[in-house]
Structures are given as structure tokens and as C-alpha cells.
Image 1 (cartoon, rainbow, N blue to C red):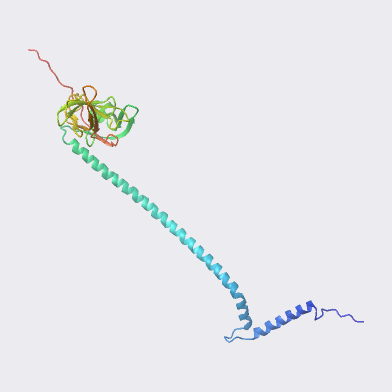
Image 2: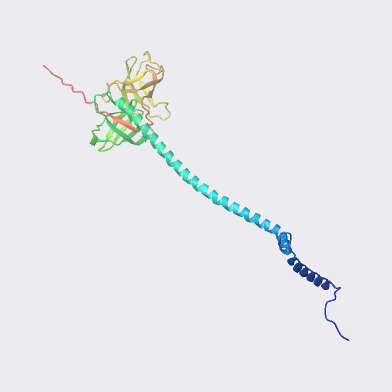
Length: 288
């Protein structure tokens, strides 16, 4: 009895083989059939099947390219912003330097106008140090004996008296400010010619740091009265502006309690003028 080895046509495997063979023949036939435009039907079918995948790939690649171009453009914009920011910073610095030069010119012009009326040549100095301890108030300036600075020489600023030289070296000098508690100046109320003494309080809590002492309660003193040096102390030339009366009231004893607003801005000094020291009086007693 003969045995046939093969797959029955009616089985599942036979159906699969039939479909494969049919598809193969269909592909062969479609490759021979042309469309209206002259293209192969198989090629048209293949392109139609692949078009969704191609569109998706194009969209992904296009989006990636757009993101990359945006990234490149963004980096370029950031680089340009960094360059512009650096230019703006340089221009702002140049502007501030120019403003500082203009401010220094104006300040020196005011000081030169103040120094003009004096019959002697002042020495211009720059402030290079500040000493403000609990009670003392002083400055360090960059001129000394090499430029002719003398001990006890009066020092003035743009608007008025600052203090006097209390220590001097070859190239530097220490200036005691009016607000120092050990500083006192013979003073004169310009309006009434009333004499007194302007003294520093050395107190940081004081509104002005200066007071006018030894003015009797009976004297006529009002807020805003100008005060100048009297020249009676032998340390300061006469007629230098000290300040104005900031407040006044009668004291519990014989003298008024007067605070003085300094004419010079003692907390913003950059340049000062050092005047010649007041010469000691030459008194000759002659007995005939």
C-alpha cells in the first residue's frame, strides 16, 4: 500500500500555502499591470501602504530639524545678548566715570570760589582716610610739610570751615573736624555780632554734632542765623563760615542751648583746602 507524504489541501497548512501562492501570483500580475499614469500597480500599492509611515517619519524628522534650528538660533541670540550686555555694562561704567568727573569739577569749582577771597594761597589736599571713633572725629589728607602744611593750620571745604591740622608729616596730615569733642572755635553771630564758642559734641546721636555755647539767654538769636569765625581764638582766620543756628532755646542757667548746622558737609568730604596757620601775635612792650 503506497503512502503519500504531503499536506492535505483542506488542512490549515494547505490553506496557508494556497494564500501565499495566490499572493505571489497577484504580485506578479500587479507588477505587469500599469496604472493610468504608466506606473506599476504593484509600486502604487506599495507606495500607498508605506505613505502613512513615510508621512510620520517626515513629520518626526521635520520636527527634530525645527527643534535643532531653534536651538541653534537660540544659542546665537544668547551669544548676541551676552555681547550686548557686556557693551551696556561698559557704557554704564563710562557714564558713571563721566558723571564723577563732572561732579568733581563742580565741587572743586565751589571750593575755588570759596578760596578766592582769602589773601593767601591755600593748599589743595585729598581725603585719604577717616577716623570716627567713639568721641574723636578726624581726617587724613595727602599733603604734609613738603607742601608747606603747618600744625594748627585751618582747613576749609566747599562751603565753610572743616577744622584744623592737629598732626603733620612729610606727605600726610591729620585734620581734626569741628564735630570732635575736643574742638572749639571762637564764633560770631553775623546778624547781631554776638560772640560765643562753637564746640563739637563728639556724640553720634547728636542731630548736628555742633553747639554754640556761652550766648546769654537775653541775646537775640533765631534759627537760621549765620555763624562765622571771630578770630579771637588765635587758631582760625576771621570771617570763615562755620554754619547756621539749627535750634535755639533758653537754658536752665544763664546761657542759651543752641545747636549749629555745619556749613560744610563734614561726612562727604573728598577735597579740602589747607590755609596758612594763624601767626602768633607779635606784642612788643616798650618802656620809655
